[in-house]
Amino acid sequence: MRFTPYLLLLLILVLDQPVNLPWVHNAGRPEPTEHELLQTYVHNASAVLDADRQAGKKHVLLIGSSRSMMLGEIRHHDLNADPHLDDRSRATLGEFTFDPRLAFPGANLLGELIVADELTRSGVKPDLIVLELGPEFLNEVLVESSYNQNIYETDFLLRHMKSFPREMMLDAIVRIALPSYRYKFRPEAAILGGFDSEFESKRNLMSLLLGQKRSFVSEGREVRDYAGSDEIHDEAFRAQLDSIAQTLVPVRQRHHLDAMVVHLLGILKNSGIPTVVWYPPVNPQFRQTIYERHGKELDPAGFDRIVRESGLAVADSTSFEKKCNRWEDAVHPSRRCNGLIAMAILNAAAAQR
Image 1 (cartoon, rainbow, N blue to C red):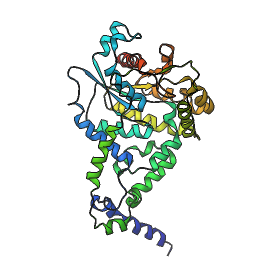
Image 2: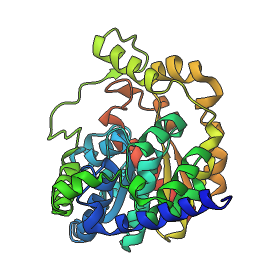
Image 3: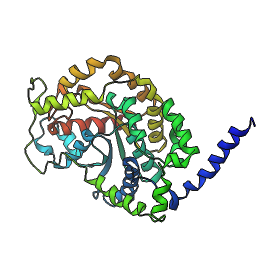
């Protein structure tokens, strides 16, 4: 009798295994989650990435948030009219294409891990990868929330779970052992639907929508921005700042995500693709109201050591405001600064060779 609980557990594990079959779990699970769509999107984007390169230009692939997406606007940038660039910098930038297709609004550390994992496994090798990292990426609450909302395949969990914070790692073990839990499987839905599923076609179709999550397409329009020294009273600006403050509270100890940062950097380093880690500039009011409020939890120095110990090149944008202190909102530097930022990234990559 004392072995009964163990036998029941073994029976549950055995009976749950058929849910691993795609035709079973696809019929009784929710719609594709955001990170599943991201994996599909990156896989499909990687397949056509080489074909989309501009002839004769070196390819810089941006991984990060909307701040990285803005660097894709360098193709609309009037290099000749940029007061921050000399002739040599203009000529250098003209040799490169900055590709923002793997940068997304509101990106976080877990999302970047998915992109880097899928990209490096695809075998595609751009000339340079630029990975955006900032203190706000290292919010354990947001990473765990993102993880809990998504479904992951067993092989992904096995590759990366050792880098997860403790609670996520324990949950990953349960997901691997119990496929019905991993896929949020509802047997009644599968049975009532006759195990007929359009999950895969829906996943491919929905993943295409990620490619439309673009922003900051200038199309030659005049840039509207303001100086970092200005005191901004605009309601939309204040609302954005307040929204960011709320998402960053509470912030648990940053070091819980150190292993994931090390793991992500290791994936890119082992890929053999030249990589630059980019620290975006920080809006002065953002720094005063957000960074100072959270103190050490959002201190860039906390993870700078880890990044530099990885051996990857680092482009620190936090000093860019000395030369181009212009901002489009509470988070995004002005597109006027794109040439300056892009050259700092390329210089960091060149110094690493």
